[in-house]
Structure formats: C-alpha cells, structure tokens
Length: 235
Image (cartoon, rainbow, N blue to C red; front, top):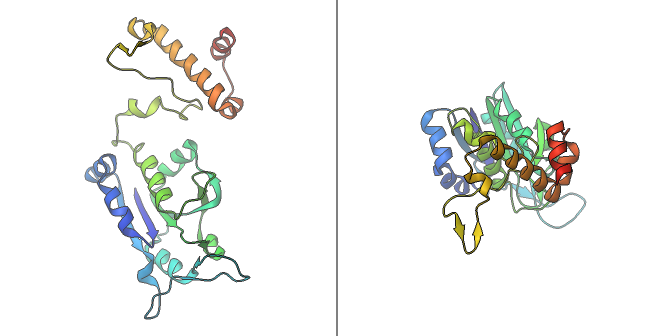
C-alpha cells in the first residue's frame, strides 16, 4: 500500500514515519509513505498558497491551484483521494478496514480556515476524525495512517488486533497484569482461574457493560445474540 500526504507542513510528518509500527511496515515493504509539500506547487515568486475568503470572514483559505497541482503530481488511476475536513463523515473502525483494502491513498491535509470547496470535488470522500476543530489536517493524516498501517498483514500479530475496542462493535474489556494486588485493588479472580470459558464469558460481559455505560449508541446498533442478552439481563 502507498499513502501520500499532501500538506503545507511536511516536517511535521517526517518524525512520525520513524514510530515503531510505521517503520516496521516500511521495512517489510507492506507500506510506502510519501509527503508532498503543497508550497512547492504554488506559483509566483512569493508562492502564495492561501487567500482571503470571498464574501468576507475571518482567516485564510487554502487555494485550489497549488493543492490541485500537487494532487495531480501524485495521483494514479487507482488512487483513492481523501480530504481531511471537519465536514467529512466520521471516521470509524469499519472505514479503517475499507481503506486498508485500497492500494493507493492520497490524504489532503487542510489548514488555516479551510480549503477552497472546489478541492473537495477532486476527493473521492471527505473524512472527519471527530467533532472538534484542529489547526490542520496533519494530525488526522497521522491518525488515518496509523489506524490503517497497524491492521495491514504483517504489521502486528493477528491476535493483537482481533479483540480490540470497535472491532466487534463493543468496547474492549478491562485488562490486567502483575502485580495481583496494587494498593488494595486486586485482579478479578476469574482471570486467575485458568478456566478459559469462564474468562471468555467474563470478558464478553465486561465489554457489554462497559459499552452500555460509556457508548450506548454502539450497543443500540448491535444485534445481540442470546448469550449476550443473557449476560446483560443477569447483571
């Protein structure tokens, strides 16, 4: 897979490429990462990449020309172009898996007050990483890259990504390690029992309870099986 990030601050991305999972993916050849500096595609001696918005308003808007020229320099026939903007669809684990199937992703990291809306027309989809505002799209670009890279085959052990929050529509159950007791708080006895079936049921029940408490919206969308209904009713 190739991921290309169009940004006006490529230096922000460079250090991230050396994080363990990303570096492992690149070393194994399962992921290729590139950054394109949008400023290099701006015309004129002053290389203006932004301008004031038509109709008035605060802030500056990223111009079409440098972004589109940068995009065309990297875009291939099989490229899937994503605009990282607050008005995009919410990013989910389901979308992570869908994007991991793509061969070539191009992420456009907006900045300033936003991008000229005509840039959106060149995108295959618009994605938002949450209901809040960031200074630019560089952090969302890292979020997408990280979430996708870690589920690529060979990035991590398969078991490490199977029982995680959101993978099955539930939040992950609580995890514990040594010591067995810390400041009066003990590890649940069932986890020390060696009974794998009891441990499985305990973990499932904790996931259900945690999801009901913190993210009831997830539970509302999930079709519970008989065992899950019984575990919740038992509580």
